[in-house]
Length: 264
Ligand SMILES: [Zn+2]
Image 1 (cartoon, helix red, strand yellow):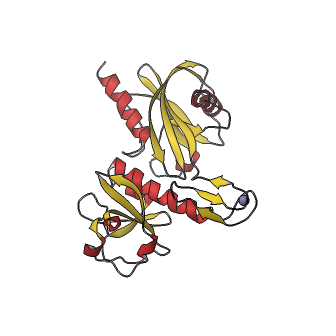
Image 2: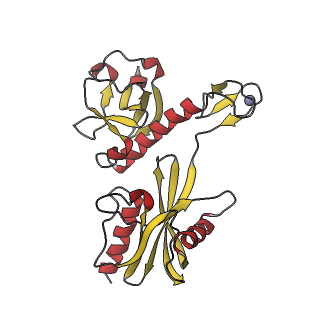
Image 3: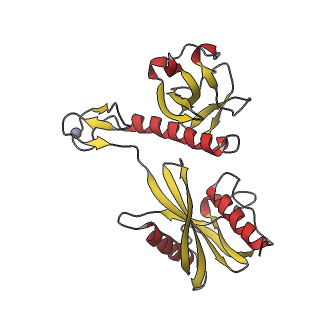
């Protein structure tokens, strides 16, 4: 069965199975993988990678599969390539969507799986549900040699506090650019100008997509929102604090900006 050949994404809640070899995601024919008895009727093709099928199977327990180890999604960022990390996020979010959309949010009847796209449909009232995706923005603010980086309250307790770009969720009815201006002002008290879109990154914590922007300082004094941030400071590019890990769009943005500064 061609359906059983490809890249295997075994997930269990927020965990994924990785192997020590190659690209770290099991690859091959199901017959050749050293797997115990699993319910392969639940295997689903959900994407493709390098021209081959991506197959996912959500397990109810992180059992020993006879190969590799279970790691959490966040840790997988440091061992997988960017595209594979995004595919793990996709597999995990599909599984979560199916688990949390069993009943109609409108009339309460059981939902049924739509067979041609990833959705759940109510046969009673027609309501259709799709996996939730929450757009957010992340913005790196610079002023000449300096960049504004913030330490979030949730990172505060770490031994070496991480300083990163300003980020926040898009509210209903907002453009992404309006979100940039609102979040920057709410969290730091300053105003920015020359806001320009850079690129985006799906971010499965929990179900976001981050749109990254660069912006320049315009006016105001830094005055942080203490409910969100523990600190925010201007840092000279020659003397940056502890930064977010490689693989995050925040780190990519800081590296991109640094590359421009050092070439000036
Ligand atoms: Zn319904």
